[in-house]
Image (cartoon, rainbow, N blue to C red; front, side, top):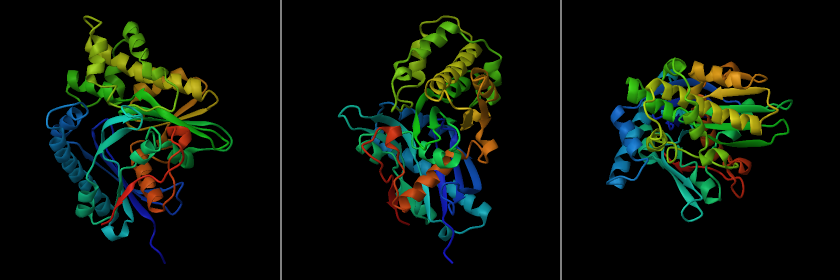
Length: 372
């Protein structure tokens, strides 16, 4: 009897709070069974360095290489935790899907092709884990003329798609992205704009806490209409998909440039406005592109923000807004499982990209394999 197709998915997203990992069984590829989940928080020193590398800085190549090594050691810890909790050896795992940490995302810029850059060292991860590693998922799509992001809508289709109605899936990590799953099998998807990145930055700066737990701080403040209106005029939000974004745009200097037009704003009111900004950017996209959806499934860390979830529901009175937990996959496991799925697709030499989402010239096999 052949062994079960077991894959590990590792994700450190734009929130930079840590590394999520899952161990999943792909006996049924469209609906993998998560056998274990693990999380390792990111040391503050590494998060600060990764944030710095999002912008031009001194000695970038040296610093990026060392930051990648440090990140991989966190990845290896997560792999060890998953194997220990499932009582499996490395030989039982077909491959690890390791996304890496995005520090620059500029597709179709500069020379028409552009680039996307994830700090990673899959060779080191393979060495430390003794398992095949699949990495570099985005660059092939960019080479084919695509955005290289988002990549999860194809995974969302198998997991959440229905043949009787349109379903919208909203992933709110550091950046938010929307998947629109039509009953005829068509899939749309793009980055809506900021997710938790600006909220987390502001919360840490003014409270010392890495995030606004359940959105309670934001809920205690008042939205500043003029500031919200200014944020919502950002050109990116009004571009037509395919499109993708990241910390290259939505970063602390961007926020500070907008805040400089206001005086004497309270920190809590800015937090309330940033939460409303994320909410409104997502709502606008759902209303415009998924008006017939009766269900909005939310995943990522934003699904744990009670105030944000309530605001989404208030803005979509005819839509059921639910956490992916209700669909059988907890919100902090969805993206890591998606990258386990992408590793599975790569090892099977099956295409995993959707030109309807990224705008690429065609579907491509994504990823590069680093054998153990």
